[in-house]
Image (cartoon, rainbow, N blue to C red; front, top):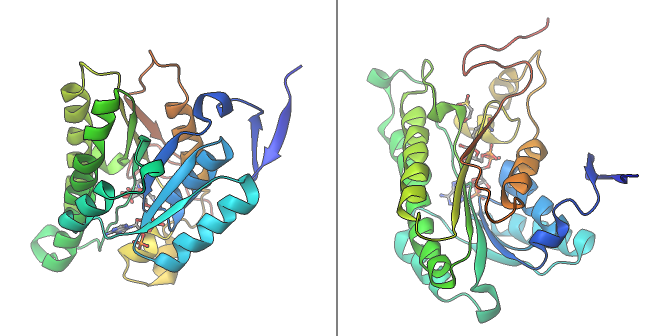
Length: 274
Ligand code: NDP
Ligand code: 8X3
């Protein structure tokens, strides 16, 4: 009989991914919150040793300690702004030797800013989104993937969005950055065709994290309204999708996984109860 246990609020079959992922090293960007944090914890639960990247160092330390206490994994906090190319390259190039063989890269750091019409948009918001979601993802990928190619081993998972498949009112530049992530995922997958390295993207609809608080520049009430009257996805739902992707047998590559809350059917079609 199959054994199920409740871990972190999720039911999972024991040993589902454990043996495949045991002792691998993963680098997760945006690990201080939301999807990145949930993914770091889920990977650690499966036996992975995570490198945690984000700008808020105290949070990186807290999450690292949680990983150590719950799962007894090694972890490394790497405080870093993914927009700073030289620092990205330098920090990856000078990782302690026991952390260099990164086998799983989760390109998750990203953000939306505002919902202005394009003709009224804030240039600083545009630049922050493009620099983080597109250029930051490129800088990290450029620094990490050559090592995977040398070792002939690795998984790259980019966190895209339904906003990379559709556009919605006020989504203009954010949607453009996620369309770019979609294209970069496909481009990298093609460029790595002669290697065993797999490239995947996971594209969620509404997930309740700090995302909307950041989008609305700290307006928590406005952020809450995004999820009113419906059950959004939880960051752990996306983390479980990532575990599924990276724990497939070596000959199986998940190209793209679109995940919606049940109450959502497209970027703009959401059923809300009073
Ligand atoms: P959160 O705001 O909760 O988390 C975003 C993470 O990105 C934080 O850890 C933040 O860390 C990090 N980050 C932002 N900018 C930088 C930077 N310049 N350098 C390093 N880290 C950075 O949001 P989510 O968890 O929801 O977002 C994660 C990803 O998921 C994003 O790419 C987002 O676009 C995508 N997504 C989110 C959806 C949602 O509905 N929530 C749906 C679809 C996709 P710190 O501030 O400490 O640097
Ligand atoms: C986040 C989901 O619909 O706010 O990528 O763009 S959405």
